[in-house]
Image (cartoon, rainbow, N blue to C red):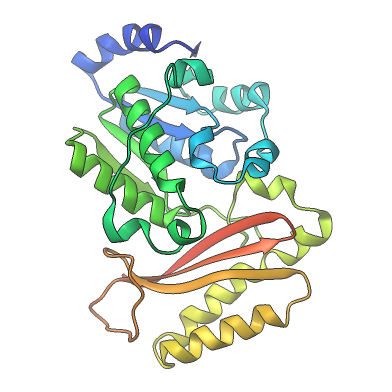
Length: 280
C-alpha cells in the first residue's frame, strides 16, 4: 500500500492503471469506521486499484469549532486500510489542496437550499470545491459514497453532471451499530450518556417508516417534533420527508414517488444526521 501526499506523485502512480484498468476512489475525512471500510471493500472488489483520500476539508465547515473538534488519527486509519486491500492512501496537506484560495461558487439549485444547506450555509460549496479537486487529482473511474450523507450524494451527482466528469458515482448502504445508530466519525465524540441516547434517532425513523403508509405527513412531522421536545438529551434541528430526486419536502405520500425521511439532531454539541428510505 502506497501513502502519498503529493498530487503529481499520485497521478504518476495511477497512470498505468488509468490506461489498463479501473480506478476506484473513496474520499474520506479520516477517523475511519466500518461504514468507510465497507465502501473501500466495495471499491477493491470492483476495481483494479483503489485510492482512499484522507483529508479534513476546511472549506465545508461553517463552524470552526466543529472543524477543530473533528477527530484525526492518521496512523489508526492506515492500519485499518491495510486490512481492506486498499492500494493507495492520498493524505494531502491544506497547502497541497489549496495552494491558492478557492473562490469558485457552485450553483446546485434547489438541492442546496434545504436541510443541510439551510442549516449549514456554505457547506455544499465547500463540498463542491474539495470533491472537484479530488476528482481532478485522482481521475477515478468510479467513486464511492455512503447513503448516510443523502443530500451530499445528490449534490455530488449534480456536480459530476454539471462539470462532465467521466466518473460513475456508486451509492452504498448506511452501516449501523448494533443498536441502530448510523456509523459516523462524530460518534466517538459523544459522551457515554449521549451515546446511550443517540439510537433514539434511528428508532424515530423506523417509527416514521411504519406510519408513512397510513398517517398524513403533517401528523408524522408533528409527532417527531413532539418526541424530541420531550427528550431530555436530544435536540431536533430538522426533520423532513423529501422527494429523492428534487430533495424538496412532500406533503403527501405517493406509492410511485421515491421519498426519504431525513433528520438532523444535536446530542450535546455533536450533530448527528440520518435518513430512512420510505418508498423505493
